[in-house]
Length: 131
Image (cartoon, rainbow, N blue to C red; front, side):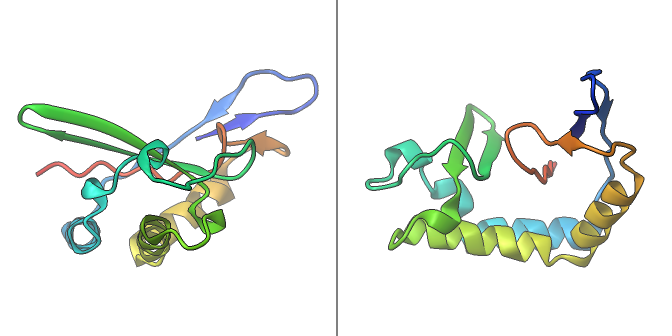
């Protein structure tokens, strides 16, 4: 999702969504499981994880039968010597390397209509896996 910041600001919004094919959904789930992403605590609960005003904040959202969680990770690439940050950033890199995700992002950016835009508080790739 991107917001227009054309002068004057007009509040326009461009977004799109897509369904992931079965192979991509499986690959995504494998990455979540392999890196135990849902077991990584939110950055505020990781000792020495620094916060800042710019950068990229990633959020994970998960729901099981009787539990729900949202966790945030501010700019893992700047978190030196923090194992969880390295795992999380590698997970993000692997998601971006999935062919379907790469092509969807390129297609999205090719079609977004604004000269100037921003994406919330940073860039985002949002995926929902339904089992």
